[in-house]
Length: 262
Ligand SMILES: NC(=O)c1ccc[n+]([C@@H]2O[C@H](COP(=O)([O-])OP(=O)(O)OC[C@H]3O[C@@H](n4cnc5c(N)ncnc54)[C@H](O)[C@@H]3O)[C@@H](O)[C@H]2O)c1
Image (cartoon, rainbow, N blue to C red; front, side, top):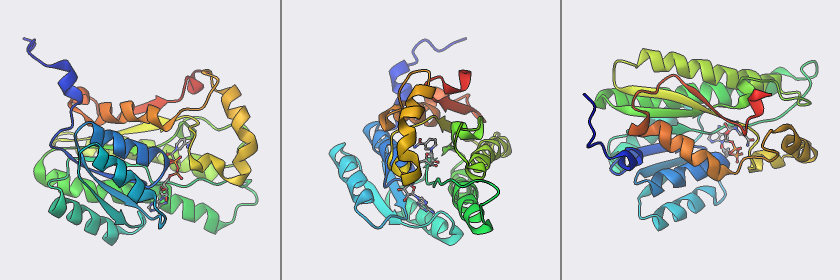
């Protein structure tokens, strides 16, 4: 029998939850971190940036009436991530939500790419997401409850026309399948794991020199004829983390303006 007293809008309420967001000093991670706070969560903000990125995120979270802590750390460091989770739990409470958005992008033809360029990107984009999810899940498994969203990319599903980034595309395909695998390992222990795969999104990542001339092409190639705004990643993240997605795990949610349909 269904429960008709269910308050549907409350399904998206994150009040009382504690989140950790990596890559929270810029772009997609920053906007999602603020969005989680606007839905009621307290948020630990992790980034390796040393500029005022994290402080800016924290400022908006305070304005939303929620608490945050700033953690300067690198997602390639297992011990830093364990410390970050411990600090989050000590200062904000039991960790129940996580978004792993830290990542880098660059390009080079495969025949020219040296091993260092390949390995550095893989270490951040794929191993970093693994180590982050592992540290977060270790805490969540103790509480028997949690939801993790890893930020992959439509580049994990398609090959971006005109961009020589075999390592990036492979890292994102890896994030998608690794997240499904972790979702199944933890499926009967209260932890859900899903991915969001954004299409072309207007963030500092797309202002790197080799990308600037591509922006117009990105808009033309996207069925909606524009790039995403970071604001448009908030709804999908809140959905996947919230009780609204209580039966959703192991899913890759493409948020791409229709890109992968064509
Ligand atoms: N912008 C896009 O078009 C787009 C599309 C699909 C997927 N993505 C993915 O979204 C995520 C966020 O990208 P963005 O566009 O917001 O880029 P961004 O550069 O604005 O933000 C990425 C953040 O991650 C941080 N970071 C990078 N390496 C780190 C490390 N080793 N440890 C800790 N922090 C680190 C950076 O300092 C930065 O603040 C990335 O995983 C990216 O691959 C972006």
